[in-house]
Image 1 (cartoon, each protein chain N blue to C red):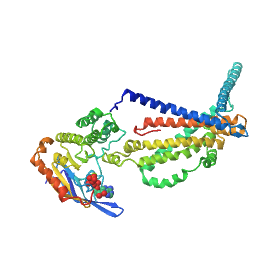
Image 2 (tube, rainbow over the protein chains, first blue to last red):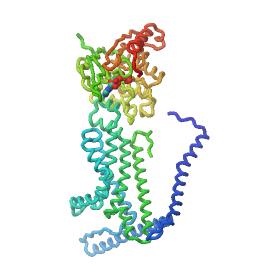
Image 3 (cartoon, rainbow over the protein chains, first blue to last red):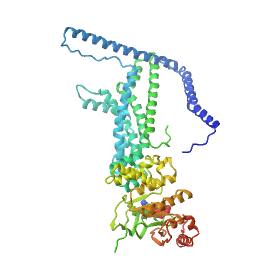
Amino acid sequence: MNIPNLSIASLKEKIENFSIKSLLFPLFGILAFVLLWQVGASRVHTSLGEFPGPAVVYEQWGGLVAEHSNERLKEEKFYERQEKRIEARQAKDPSYVGKLRAYTGKPTFFDQIFTSLYTVLAGFGLASLIAIPLGILIGLNSSVYSALNPVIQIFKPVSPLAWLPLVTMVVSASYVSDDPMFSKSFLTSMFTVTLCCMWPTLINTAVGVAAVEKDLLNVSKVLRLGWVTHVMKIVIPSAIPLMFTGLRLSLGIAWMVLIAAEMLAQNPGLGKFVWDEFQNGSSNSLGRIMVAVLMIGFIGFLLDRAMLTVQRFVSWDKTQVLR
Amino acid sequence: MSTTHLDISKVSIEFPTAKGFFKALDGVSLKIEKGEFVSLIGHSGCGKSTVLNIVAGLYDATEGGILLDGKEVKGPGPERAVVFQNHSLLPWLTSYQNVELAVKQVFKKTKSKKEMHDWIMHNLELVHMTHAADKRPDEISGGMKQRVGIARALAMEPSVLLMDEPFGALDALTRAHLQDSLMEIQKDLNNTVIMITHDVDEAVLLSDRIVMMTNGPEATIGEILKVDLDRPRDRLALANDPKYVDYRAQVLTFLYEKQRKVESA
Ligand SMILES: Nc1ncnc2c1ncn2[C@@H]1O[C@H](COP(=O)(O)OP(=O)(O)OP(=O)(O)O)[C@@H](O)[C@H]1O
Ligand SMILES: [Mg+2]
């Protein structure tokens, strides 16, 4: 490899350019946004008071953090009390086997974040498990493609709100168990996410698989590679860049769909948090909702970055510009 | 009567197109001996690649067929290894792994792990590419990629090596270098080779016979020129050799007088 001949001066220039582009400009953008937000917010009046500006949101954030640690403390004490009670009874009657009752406090903001996160990952994971193999199959075989294409095209644009009632009814009817491993609300949210977010992965995988270079297919033929080797060594690697494009789109959709589904179905998660605050209608509500909005955005961003990191790691095409 | 090593027998092919059938080749017949180096030369679009693809088994002839050691060949196979014009290395594998894919496929039953490794390294050595064994195609130059492509084909131990303009995309110096390498390898391994080329000098320098094709459609073999020059051949010494100059002139005459391309290509 040739290292381009750089003088010290031009190297310095490069570094400066880099830090300006990667640090200063984004900082400037954020600052400008906060300023606009502050100015704009003070002009919007609602029945619940002024639209929350940055300062109010920061305050509410503090409140939510405090609420969370309070709740944790209460939980700890609750269990402590129970344990003491059980011990006391066991001292009197050694055969007594105590049973801890689970704490059922109100889920805090952070509990809701956690719920949303694992629901979205479960839904997205399930969608990928279905969409990738199916996409490969469709891409490999044009008959399967023609057969499934109309179905895909029809289901692709369906909104999560349309799926939700159906999924809810089906889950209620078919998932009956005395000691359920998953809650019904989790399953409903997860399946809705799966149904809505699998399409980009499915389609991009299929396109990637179908677009394997002809020369590489010829190599495979000349080598008489078996079907499995052909798929593993030729087809999947060449489809990986497009597959990841699909996966990233899917994860983005999954996150958006989940919030909507949680709001509509009143399933635990960030969506429910927003809805509850809206129904609550206290003077804090708008600020708290704004915190949730920013958090939703931030998590969405982190999810996408995580996917990008995985892509960088897995993809062979290091020349591809990933952003 | 001994059977010929490779017998291309009365091959014709028709491609279905929007405007009906297009007959690209008509009655192409050629017998090739073991260890012979044959080049195919002809104007662009005459059907050279098509001939090669039929021998490789990637296309099916509409009439006629291919006999290898007396047996008809159907479909592609590693005993007829192909070096493609655009190297066609798998971009996600290193040079070593690209060759390994071929070696594992061909020798998985007959060679041990260690033997396979040695064989891969041996073939990379043949094309002087051991230093870049762990580099991926996008990290090496065009000439190096072509070398790895040749190593991959040689590693299959093919009875026939098919090369479609293997050096077409390379600069003159790299090309000369690879031609010399190829002659050396050919001397040692005595492979049967069919090579497509656009380059008259390359054809004369490398070949035992030059097969000149007429223009399509319905292209066929126009003339065959036997190149009777001693090996090893040295490009500098040959440049002024009257026999060499004469062979060169004969090919040029065929291409630019007898088969002058009427329409501008
Ligand atoms: N799969 C195909 N379907 C239809 N026509 C084809 C197909 N492959 C080749 N042809 C036609 O057959 C003719 C010969 O093509 P071929 O690629 O063999 O030419 P060539 O001699 O290799 O040309 P070049 O030197 O430019 O590579 C061309 O007219 C081409 O359009
Ligand atoms: Mg060609």
